Image 1 (tube, helix red, strand yellow):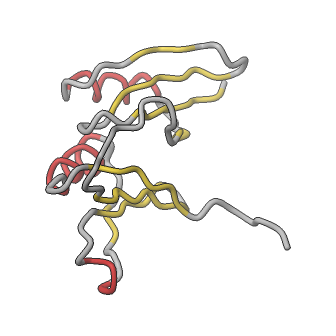
Image 2 (cartoon, one colour; image 1 turned 60 degrees about the vertical axis):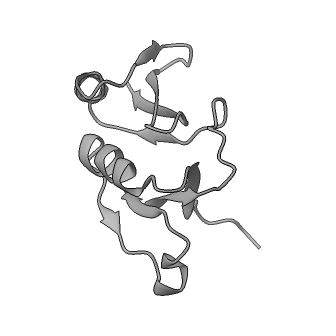
Length: 120
């Protein structure tokens, strides 16, 4: 047995968050939305493609934002992304604590922590 790749990451959002998720993940981050299987559609939420992997936004009735746990996305132009995030009203925190990488942290519209990384 071997783990061969990461298939998807799921973050939670409150009920009724689908439109805001589409605006942020689909609009600001320009991630392509993918259809959920019909067998899961009634649960709510929305799925996006992140390269070969997927990001699932799942609905949680007792939602609490993840302020430490987070997905990290590799990007090819961190400065442009930071400008786009700030233009959309999202606070951006820069970090260079990892040698060979520049990172930014932000939060999605629901308060979940997100990290974006560009290696150099």
